[in-house]
Image (tube, rainbow, N blue to C red; front, side, top):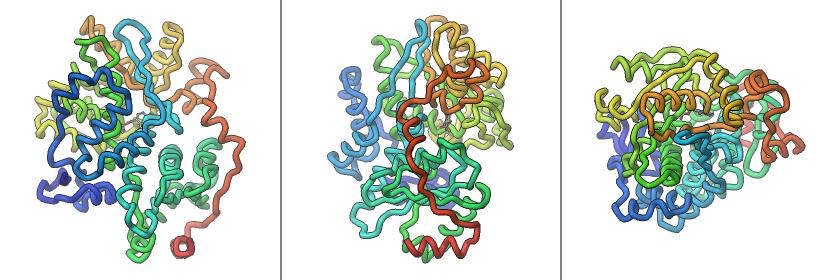
Length: 432
Ligand SMILES: *Cc1c(COP(=O)(O)O)cnc(C)c1O
């Protein structure tokens, strides 16, 4: 399969280049040349398949021409080591819990798959693949955890000293093995500038076989479509779900569109956002106006220029009419989100995080206008990741930190301290 840039259909690359490069040189995004469809045989048996079996079928549809079946099976098995349970709060009101992975957010699905696929794509190279990443918190943790113990890869994470939370720091510094943490005496921007300087240095970039685990990497989208199919099959036969996706960069929603393209029956998609509502505004007006983001309590969705919007446009052939026929956009304020966190707790006894709460509000509004429909709201992170908001709404000590994160607190921090000097950073990279 070949992949082309959304900016230039004639710029085509193979899977290895699309995945290791992440971004085409023309700043578009990579899309598969042919969008796969799963055959009728799959849709006869899909309700009886396991999560992993659904994963193989989807992965094979996208990558089967380039990656042998057994390798793909290992990649999917290594990715899906945890479930995505569907919880029913009330008839028609379903929550898809995507936070059972090691870093408690849905990004684990994409990051774990990408790490394993990158490891496989570089399996014959005698040099290790070095993933260089600057982080202000969560991204670094998901990437570190995803690449931990993946053969042929190592990760170097730069984070600003004193500017990440204690548990976040442990997610970066306590894994050991092929994960190295650099504690930089500077800001997040300094970390990013250092990473950029290494990529721009051809000698270093070649010597270390550098890659970035960029969030718009195409290989992160495909595994996110697995759980759309896995959750839909748990509804009664004949019931088509309305998927409600709390969105920022719109990777998660794009993965849902890929699942529909594969043949999954979907009634509708809802793009639920906080005040950063560039896409809902586009859906109602036809006018796309990216703008600087504003800070909200659902901060992983504070995006003013969603990077996957061009992929969504490509999937609808650039037609606003087709997009709005399939996707409804809606926005909720922080006050509404806070009230929803309290309401979901008092009515259903369920702890929902601020991102999931935005989705739940959109789902409730949709069901009110479309009685009898079944909504599946994506719960993208565990509420314990947002202790301040959860405590303010539900009180102290209500939300427990899951064991898999809590154990990190007792592990020792191992980090190398460096300044912001570019030459010294490059010397360090040459020495490893
Ligand atoms: C990244 C993230 C989102 C937004 O997902 P996109 O794919 O960028 O739209 C929503 N919720 C949480 C918790 C996230 O980490």
